[in-house]
Amino acid sequence: MDAIEHVLAIRNDLGECPLWHPSEKKLYWVDIEKHTIYLLDPVSGDLIYHNVGLPVGSFAFRSKGGMILATRDGFAFWQPGDNDLFFLGDPEPGKPGARFNDGAVDRAGRFWAGTMTEDDDSSSLYRLDRDHTFHQMESGITISNGMGWSPDNRVFYFTDTIRKVIYAYDFDLQSGTITNRRKFVESPNEAGVPDGLTVDSQGFVWSVRCGGGNIVRYDPSGCVERVITLPVSHPTSCIFGGTELNELYITTSRMLVPEEHRMQQPLAGDLFRLRIDIRGLPVSEFQD
Image (cartoon, rainbow, N blue to C red; front, side, top):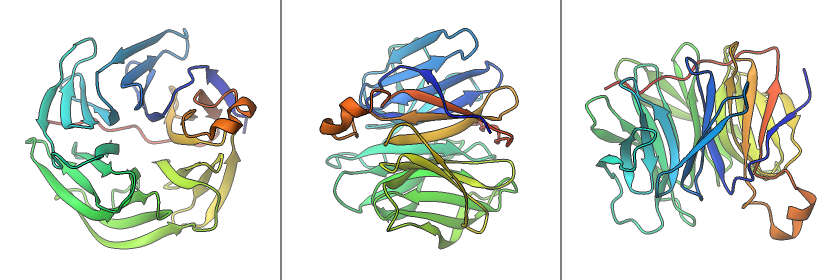
């Protein structure tokens, strides 16, 4: 396994939601605080970015082109280069301090995204279906975060950040239902909190520890298989990319690093990569 590579000095306030586009062979991600979506060609180094005018917690590629966004103001369609968003609806209208956070698309083409507030446990998880209706799937969450599915589509993973818990559910791909919630990982004594996650082709879960400066790989039973130490304290999310899906891209935050420590972390907010002999799973597109 190679060392962590410093890919791009971007100094994101809150980099999040990296996604690899398989046909474009490019990496997308967001800076939530800067309202910006980035697009990087890792081969040429070309970087394109778009300010969409409001916080975007997560997004996914759409089969019809463009993207589905989970924003401060609800779900919206967006075409790169356009100035306008087409809003589908907001499941939590008028809720003070609330916005969407992390999200992902299941292999039937439904978009899942969770909400967050800063100081309570009133957040929820929603599923946006192909007919553009949305459904509350979980409630009583602190900060909704990293989610993903096992390779056989039988298990759904979902992170409740402030409680330092990753839940596992039984998942039915055809109906999109989740049942039998249990604690996959609970880590009250570990540094930092669980943030974004991804699931690899072997069914292992990679969970980023924001504030802990590492990524933990858990086996399907929830046992720690390895810990990857990073050169910054506040990584936020990760995704497998590259033509062979064996390059783990990692987003980070500068804003979350305490101000008195920022001088010691000049790479905080930058983009990193780990080349590894493990392959990820391709991301799914929102189908509508």
